[in-house]
Each structure stands twice: as structure tokens, then as C-alpha cells.
Amino acid sequence: MDSTDVRNGSATGGASDSLTERIVAAVAETDDQSVDDLEPLYEVIDPDALNTLFGPHVDGSSRTVGEISFQYAGYWVTVSSEYVIDIEPKDG
Image (cartoon, rainbow, N blue to C red; front, side):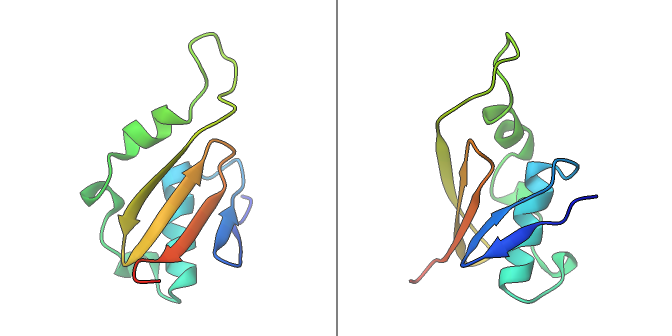
């Protein structure tokens, strides 16, 4: 399994982790806590909808542009269509 790479508030993850797993892991690492200590991601955003949003088009082609931002565990989390996760403090 590939690990999540977090640098300067941004993360990219391995192909074997789901997008939602990488988001939770990146926030936990940024906040230096266990993923078990965070509220479930599904309480703030629909994980299936998030995965579908950045999934391939019906014809199998990749989505090339787009991003979504939401608040989670005291952070603004922005996810791009390139699966880059940017984490910023909510009050910063």
C-alpha cells in the first residue's frame, strides 16, 4: 500500500487508498492525532458523492479539472481532480 505524502499542508496519496481515506489520514497527520480520534468524514460530506465527483467520466476518460472545498475537523480541506489534498486551518 502506498502511503499518503503530506507536505506544507498538501497531500497526495497512493492509488490503493480511497480518496476519503487519504483525506482523513492527511487531516489526522496534520493535526498529529489518530484517524480514530476524528469525527467520521460522512458527517460533513457524502464520501460516495466525493468519490464519484472525481471518478472517471462515463466513457472512462479522466476528469482533468475541478476542486471542492469543505470544512472538516477544524480545517478547510480542498481536493482537486488530480487528487491533491490541501489542508488549511479554518481560522487561518
